[in-house]
Length: 269
Image 1 (spheres, one colour):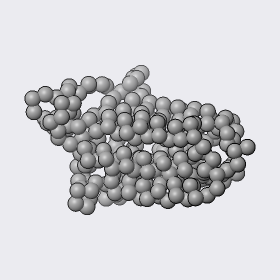
Image 2 (cartoon, helix red, strand yellow; image 1 turned 135 degrees about the horizontal axis):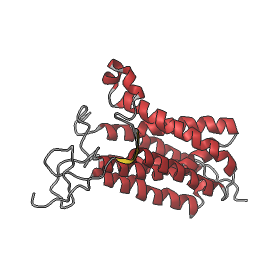
Image 3 (cartoon, one colour; image 1 turned 180 degrees about the vertical axis):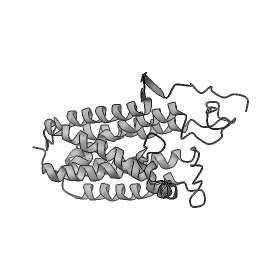
Image 4 (spheres, one colour; image 1 turned 60 degrees about the vertical axis):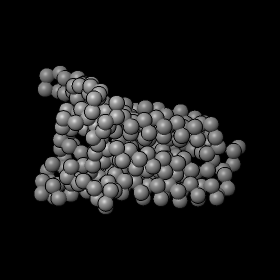
């Protein structure tokens, strides 16, 4: 390969004060959660109104716990079950290695369901709210992956390929940026347009279905360019773990979309 882009080396530690070090990865989670929460607040002030903005403070706490606990447990169960079975204390050391989006998604789904039951609000309307905000967190998370030089792509001779610090001497796809674009910006444009510029919110579950289909398709596409996890490789022929976990999301999303469209729309009044 004649040309490749230089990887912009950025210190993973954004702020360091004595023994206290704050990483870009942590800031990405904070930014995603806070901006996602703000997005939800804005949506709750538009019809159909089913929950007060004040109650969303509690939802932020539920979502944070769902993301962290679900993301970590998902990584433990989906990606390194044997390692963590032999080293159970490592499960608590989230700063060492590993969070799973699919696990975080399940964690937020459970947390959202519990929040909906406690507050007495429709679970599907809440799911649509969370689905609209989720791509914001995905965008910041993938940018943080890029800064860390992790989850890089497969070897490539594309003119925008990069030599990653931990990816060997060959240039690779910056697949983290592909994911930030597709799972973050493009998906947010789709669900945001549905939420703000259409009557989709009057059909509970429709936006959540769009999100599930959109994320599953975006992730499965980017997996064609992303280097499979070294300890897993390909799972079934050319299929990666990311594609395997995304397939049920697409299926559930299609079902949610069909059910939402078949049901009568809520009263617009």
